[in-house]
Amino acid sequence: MIKGIIFDLDGVIVSTDDLHYLGWKMIANRENIHFDKTINHQLRGVSRMESLNILLNHSFKVYSQTEKMQLASMKNDYYVSLLGNLSQSDLLPGALELIKYLKRKNYLLAIGSSSKNASIIIDKLNIREYFNVIVDGNDISNSKPHPEVFLTAANKLGLTSAECVVIEDAVTGIDAAKAANMITYGIGSAKNYEKTDFGIDSLYDLIDTL
Ligand code: BG6
Ligand code: MG
Image (cartoon, rainbow, N blue to C red; front, side):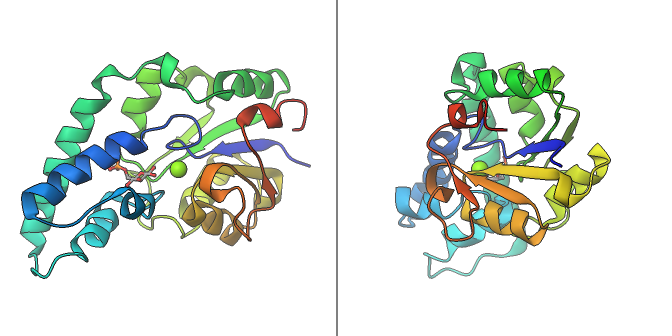
């Protein structure tokens, strides 16, 4: 029996992709590296340092660990400054309606995100009160597709994997949830992924379904 719903954050509840894109584009321009929306797409669900490594794969220069840390921190400072204007009106369609519906149905709710900025985003969106558990990039050592983020969320909810479902927009996130033995709902780029159990067009699709 399903008792808990674990939401990915970026791309499911809020669209921060464009802001991540602007952050990485600033680094790519500075370093003279080609970077476009297709490459940005590969960074979905991937941790900050792994995202930087994917970006730097398009450069001939070899970067030291110190240089990489500086670039990641520069990207993050810019990204966080872009988050400044985020508010509840940036929630993706159906997010608030679904969250309220699930609370009425007494499901336990969790966030399972790779982002170390999840807390800032959740507060800007003013949705913290709805979540029993928040697991983010600061709580895990292995980022998606490793199942750690979802297993930690289930554990903190006091539930087994079989009692949880995951809502994800990233292929790496679906891989992580399947590795955790959880049922998956895929939205956006994860909708038609072969490992996704149920593809959905919008979060509205889950109201009266779950
Ligand atoms: C994920 C995003 O939620 O968080 C990725 O989908 C991002 O694109 C990752 O790289 C890490 O984010 P942050 O905020 O810790 O740099
Ligand atoms: Mg996502």
